[in-house]
Image (cartoon, rainbow, N blue to C red; front, side, top):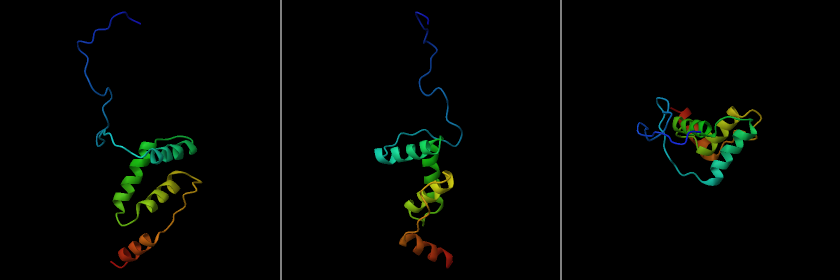
Length: 103
């Protein structure tokens, strides 16, 4: 380790830029929600809880009429083999499916 470092040409901010199409943000998520996603990734043997949250949000955006709970259950059953989160259809989901199938 050096005794002195020269920081005259140093730059502030993130050293690694996020990939194109990604934006670094700070959000507040309830502790229990974050812990739940981290546990799902841990139980699956690894992965990225941030990617799982992103996938759940994207799926929910694409299926606006599907309740968030159903979206999360579907994503978890797809992403985590053997997940206890089996698809569960709420009354609202069934009603939304009937409404979209009539179109």
